[in-house]
Image 1 (cartoon, one colour):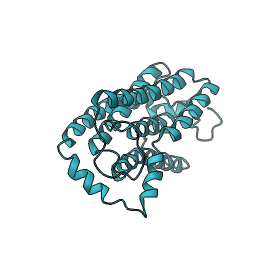
Image 2: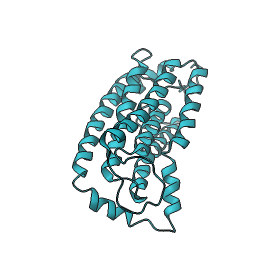
Image 3: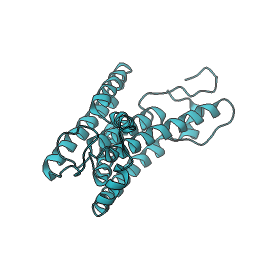
Image 4: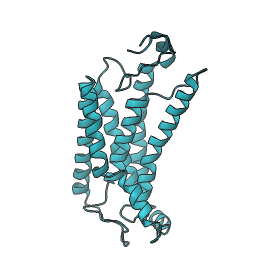
Length: 237
């Protein structure tokens, strides 16, 4: 249970309700960006693609793997099982269903829109059509879900021993927000996606992340998926 002394400081309900609305607004903004980028895909592709060469292609492939289903499916499965073990069944179900919906939606859109891959020699193997980027969608969904679930809102700094905890939380947010960005960039750098594919992929990931928050439900309102003890050494939790 959240320590009573933290209740006023954290205000989790208001911040997480705001998170859902922000995610949906960001999804709409990214879809608008994807449409806008359709007119600039070719120059953007060549500007980014020319940064890749034989010496750094392996690095971009490694970054790209951080958004691969081969990497993220075991992560989602492990986190979901951990949540079930902790008795957070609805949170585990929301995470798993959001992940499945993200992956299936990407595959359906690829089939429906049938967009070709960029006409360059790819530095990495990629199957199927281009739009949207599955790696970008999966990375956005999983890493943002982990940030919202395990880090909670980014609270203002606090005095005393909690300063380090606040710093680590903000650093964690920075890392988990940055990972989808670099994964998306790597897909263009490897020549397997257009920039608009990546923006649309991020939009899909954010949309289902917002729906997962809604599915988690208003009861036990918006605390992190794993309840944390945030006492200041009083012995209560």
